[in-house]
Image 1 (cartoon, rainbow, N blue to C red):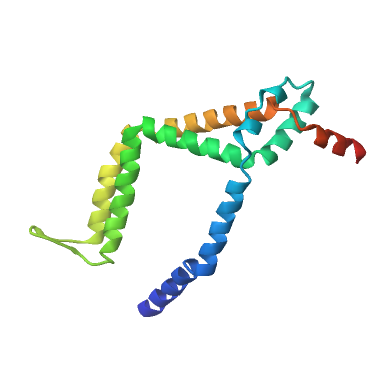
Image 2 (tube, rainbow, N blue to C red):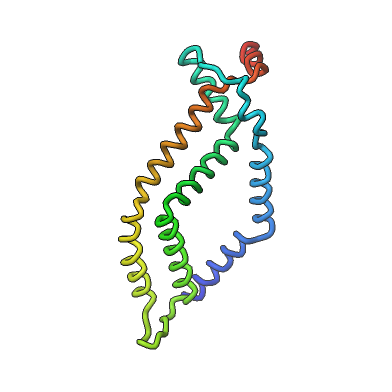
Length: 176
């Protein structure tokens, strides 16, 4: 039964890593990067104005969230990187946990042989948990996440609400 599970997991892994799947993911990433708007357009000061009313604000935000979605994703990614670089303990804890899990998984369920005796994988996971949880509380991931959410929302919605829609879209809406 265990061999069947291993074969099923291997076949699923090979499907995920197939050349067609990797090519499709690469094309998806390429299309996202190609849909980035140039900085001259994204930071065009001539298109910045105060919305006239709430309906205009809704219309601008709706349009700009679709039109600049790749740019906004890039901004959120940069803010995420900034959050991790300013909270080095959190970055260390994340790397420590992922590295520990990868190291334990490399044992493939077998015991770790040390000069002090064998250590089971369940004991290794427990030790990793006992070290990572207190460090995680000290690193304050919740406040970092709340800051990231607030900064991202403020930045994206500020840009989306003050950036005018192009003239072409106004004429398209009136003809409908």
